[in-house]
Image 1: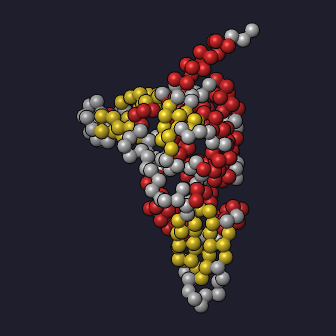
Image 2 (image 1 turned 90 degrees about the horizontal axis):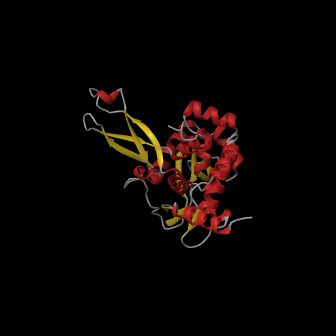
Image 3 (image 1 turned 180 degrees about the vertical axis):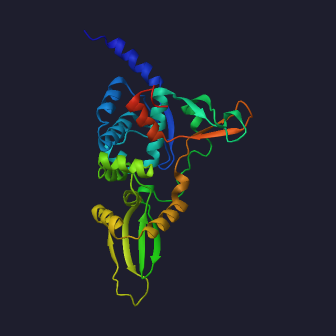
Length: 296
């Protein structure tokens, strides 16, 4: 026979562990509940594919997140929340579940210090990787999912025009769906990132236009927002130097919004400050894959 009082008490206990966090791009506060045993099993079974894993992470984030102004349907959740806000949700889920990233190694930047080669160890709490400059609030008048910033790159007789954006969770999942496990491993080995240059470009823009650079040009303006066409264009036709200039200008506009999760510790020998940066998505992936013993 089910003991309802026992389950009600468990429910109250688990609610105490909720973590409040701010979503800087949509400018809302939310509470995030911790993972339970069943959630961990679900994540582990989805680790065979990056698409399945990310999909299940997003579903969990939607399930565990409570908005101050009421609930948000799943489709709205993935389309109206930025991929940057997702990092804040992962931090809150991580904190409410584990509290700590575990013990980490810190190398002193001073060459003549004992800890330049022989690191000292410190436990890193999730609270301690949030700094004053970790988040930057969205500054534009339009909501991020309605906002685009045109970047024009002239190249010889052509002007490449990109409608750039901050990607939503749905945008990220759409690109991730094009990445097989083999391609993901290849990207990580060669560039240290999940996406290739072409995939990253497709993630950061909503549309692309090419036109002639002068009035007498025989190039008629043409535009596409089709993902398959964009991927083919980046892989086969857009000059690499154009992509470099685009990413430079994109970062000038949007890089300030990317969260900085880091902690600063003083070297126990010389007192020099040592900074360690953390990729929360990678940290959470390792924790899900290996558990607490191997994630460090």
